Structure formats: C-alpha cells, structure tokens
Length: 166
Image (cartoon, rainbow, N blue to C red):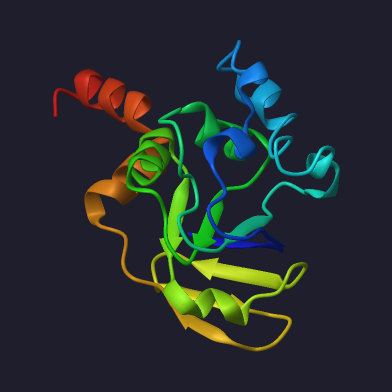
C-alpha cells in the first residue's frame, strides 16, 4: 500500500476534542465528522485538505477522551495515515479498529514540514519526504493490525471472518 499526499503538521498533545469537538458527536457518519475534522484546533482546517493527504503530529497525538469519532473524522476528512512522534495508547488502538494507519516515528517527525509532499509505503516500511528527499524508516505494522486496516476496520474485519467461517 503506497500513499502520496501533502503533510498537514500539527503540534504535540493534540487531543480528541481538538480532532473532533464534542458538539459534533451526534453522528458516526464519517463524511459529517470529516467535514468538521480539526475544528477544535483550527476552524476551517478541512478546506486545506485533499483526499490522501497525511497528518503529521508531535508527541501524544490523540490524547484525551476515548472517542472512536476522532479516527473516523480523520478518515472522513480524507486522511488515511497519521505519522507522529508518539500516540496516546487508546487512540492508537481505536485508530486501527477504525481502519486508520498510524506511524510512530519518534524524532524523525522533525524531518517533515507543513506542506511537504510525502509518500508512505506501508509494505516497505518507508516514509519519503518528496520535498526534501529525507527518508524515514517506519516500524513494521503488525500483520494483525494490517488485516484490520485492509478490511476497513474491526467491524468489517469481523463480518468478513464470520461470512467466510475463518
């Protein structure tokens, strides 16, 4: 799986309420949540995003309340991947359960600027900054987590397993 897009860089400790404020939690519709993604951090942020763009964050991205709406909002905004210095643990698990790819890259995040063009190759474990030429080795995503993402999240994964008797 290879993904190309523009980096949208945010700082450290971005909580789930910044990703999708509580006032928008009246639905689980990904398009409606996506239309309001990052409203708690920067109103109108979604207007700068093109489907396939990549969120880049500092440490502890997704901290705060355990709401599945946050990764759904990112997916609804067209963001298939978030690369960050680190993630809040519950957000990490919720994201894969919803089908959102997370790449924890530590201090390598400093090699990416807002607006840089990126290419992520999940299978090769490589994030290329096409703007600067920097290459960042990405830790492998466990096979079980890749299966969740490939299926579109935990619910579609389980439905498929039930249907196939696996």
